[in-house]
Length: 615
Ligand code: M6R
Image 1 (cartoon, rainbow, N blue to C red):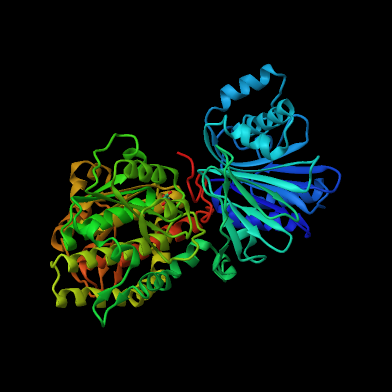
Image 2: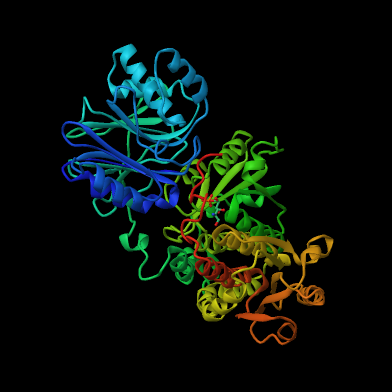
């Protein structure tokens, strides 16, 4: 959470930083700020609100000159979102200025110590404590900024990605990382700093990703040297060539990133299985699995850890692994798993699922499982992310950048990767014969075209959205493979439209939620023709008897549910295990349209951030 951007070089820093902050706004957007060095002084502007508000304020209030600058877009942790708590923060002398993504857990004791030494604080933030700690170390030890940052960070408990500069030495920026991402773009005698590569991709394809506990002094005209924060050992940066495409991070004619990403799903799913799924040859090729097949085949069980939408993909995977590959699976919220002293052995395989690859709880769960000897496999979207690096092996989803805070294509591509894995194991274990294996591979190959067809429901879904846009509550029901889809549908609605929504296994409804049903309650029911169709039809009858409004997602050609439901959305027929890839599409569209009609900020819903890098 929080996005940081910095620049030092020969270009004007202001437009680079502002544009960069706009691209990183998905990480946090309750306030924003910028500090520029104009050759003499630091000019700083910050405000509660969006980067657009910062742009308006800064253009009126400060000089925008300077070839050195840092900027920040915030997701508040310490202190409410307001102008004062926004970053950057000055040190007491006014010489140092810092931006920070993360949390300094021991900030209170450090602050008390600094107050005793005469420091004063204007904000409630942990970040202002850090910049003054650096200043105090610099003054007391008589060291340069880089060394002062290193000594100060050794006194800090928490997580950070920081960038700091000193107006007395304006040819360098010092950066450091622990737990929060930080990339350095390396150009021709210019450097960029950012939470991910999107702010600098049009200037350079060369990036260095700092590892945890590394820092660098970025100095013009010098090669970058990385150091370990703890023991000062030199670390050798590897410059990665980025393949990110500028178009992928722009809206491309859609009103919102979320809608663009919903529509990208046929391509994203195809990209995810491309080169891995060879239906004609009857092969699934995935290096991360092929190289570690024995670990999976000999595993006592698979434990899946994730958060949010990725956790829902994990729940779908539980059905897939148990049903197809007959491997016991436990799915855990990473935040619970890491703190409940779980029993893990070296016969366990842990699969961590994360779009961003930066979620703090998932990362901590991985570290715990590794300590206990489990083999850890990652399913991530962001290449080179912390989780991708921390796991023993893994498989990327190839969804492309997901910018909308509400996950859409990440979900379907995660399910695609996990399906490939389960099918491969089912074949290797001899559970699937060639015919059954071939049937599944061919049908998975057909899914992108079927998602295209499911997307054709958009105009109908928009009409349905209009009917229910003013609802205050909504229930989502599904069974078997589609129970996690019900959870995901409810999450999508609540996070972007702020309507209270609950997902339930359809049969569980009569154990409580049925009490909520009356003529004002919309109930979205997934009732595809495979699995427990007749049972779901009975559940629909129960809702109807209580006058609930039924929005049913059914397989095309369905007659029975059509007679009962208020609205019917048809999706193409497919194998039961693949239905989540289709049933989820109208639910994404429904939440999207309702949120738009309610005037909500679809891509940046209140209080949320795209990657949750704090616990
Ligand atoms: O990047 P991750 O997949 O690890 O993120 C996990 C959750 O924070 C994320 O899925 C969140 O729930 C989304 N807002 C859901 O749309």
